[in-house]
Image (tube, rainbow over all chains, first blue to last red; front, side, top):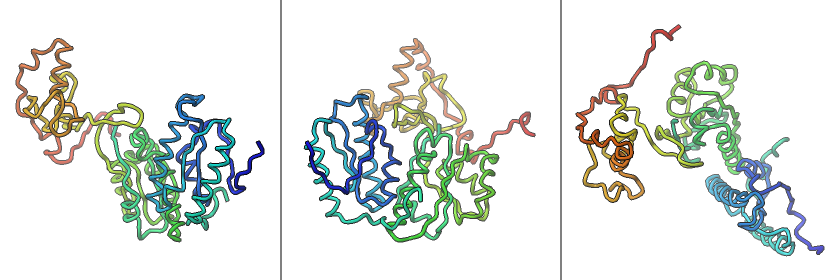
Amino acid sequence: MRLNYPANVKIVKVPCTGRVDVLLILKVFESGVDGVYLAGCLEGECHFLKGNLRAKKRVQYVKGLLDEVGLGGSRLEMVNMSSAQGQRFAEFAREMTEKIRALGPSPVKKLKRVGD
Amino acid sequence: MIVGNRKSLEEILDMIKPHKKILLLGCNECVTVCAAGGEREVGVLASELRLWSAKEGQEIEIREHTLERQCDHEYIDQIRPFVGDYEAVLSMACGAGVQYVAERYRTKPVFPAVNTTFLGVTLEHGVWSERCQGCGTCILEKTGGICPIARCAKSLLNGPCGGSSNGKCEVDKEIDCAWQLIIDRLKELGQMDRYEEIIPVKDWTTSRDGGPRKRIREDLKL
């Protein structure tokens, strides 16, 4: 399809969104990123049955933590799409980039990167 | 297990406000099982604190450490080599752990990051429920294995009261009437004759009314 999506979106591959732990998301924010989204399979289509539904709950939980910290839960989103929806993938990458750009850079930018 | 609930970040920040070097201390026992103060929760709170401090432009150094238990001095003593490097300890243990850490390091401020709530069980993953109040005189043999002290809002020894409706408590429609549960269980056990027995007034001196409690087993003392 050779679709374009914003170059600022960095992809971290995981076997299933159910793999994504609360701490993993928080550490990414600690590294200074402006926003994060989890792109999981369509609801009801999880190869591992509930991985994407678990991820959805964790995203909701971390959104609460980010609000508590003052970063804003809207910097984190969950989106569902199938591997055949390349168009949707590119579209959401653009939508999320615009949304995060409107929110501005993460206020923790100056924080030392995790692992440094 | 002892079930706790983490305090809000706002409350925690208010406690640790004057300090810049914090030892964040988790506990591997009950609070790990109820996901309130184990190693993972220590990681999450430390991350939240780091994010907050970076956002506010404040320098806070946090060391994450989780002890096997905070209710035994053998484990608490393990932090002795480095506790002095920190201005305060933020403990994620139950109230017993927080107090014991404070007792062992008398010059170090120790703050609770968790509200200790009850003695309970895991109903399902992520759901915990109260079962015991540690009253010191167990009467479960009389009540079909269901505790009216912990599970009846009035701790009635001879129930139910008039507030029991369709098996639910008047306090909250989500709460089962403990005495309805007791009657149902006694029926299942074929022990309804026990329900006929009047349970006399309870001696509460074994509970908190007798002051803080202590248990000694001379044969185990060294």
